[in-house]
Length: 291
Image (tube, rainbow, N blue to C red; front, side, top):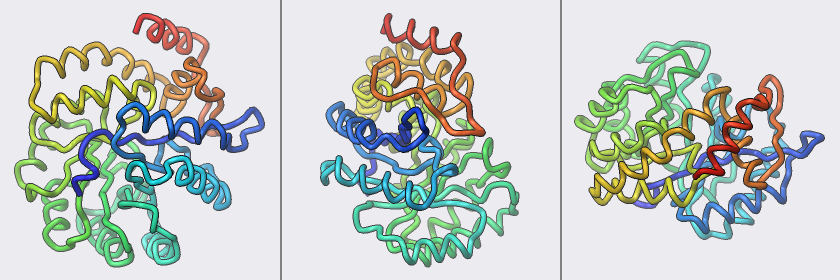
């Protein structure tokens, strides 16, 4: 899974003013990421507003990204939820040939026990034709995938190959790194602690800010992976204010405001999300002007 070491970006889904998918903007965004050092792309994750897309729209997004990417960098597909049986069925009938792996979020809302989480990923592992990356994001799911559960899954299922760790707990991330097999990917799911996780032995990031600052953020990640600590932190502290800004009013409203300031897409999200306030948009534009 060396292809998934480094900087992955969780792609937005750009919308036009009528809230239809903006295929041209999405295609251009993919090409921009490739041209600025991003190592792989994640399609239809939370940042892509996948919860508000229809089946036909998801198919359109997938087709657009595959075509624009043209085999240049690896792709990861987000397939997750809290209906285990329905997910297994979806995995059996989804064409995953263009994807290196799937990213599957821990079941949300249901708040399963650790045993329930284990059994859920057991079914996902058995149903998936491609490697599986666990996505742990307690702030959205209301349950935490504990290191002991991740270790158990890593030991029992060869095609569970990594975790996107977004618990916001650097100690938990270090525990994961310390107990998991060396080739099991520990990927930061939190832009702000990406560099500390990499320097502690992590393998990279699936990023949001990397989409707005692809060249600089991917360079920081690479410097971290090379152990060039001082140079990496110089970039980290330069980028850091932008991370606070893009998450101040939720994701992906913030990153869409940043991309709009770069004329990369229109500034629209779908309900129940709302676009960033004028105040925040002004702060983001001011940051980009200084940056």
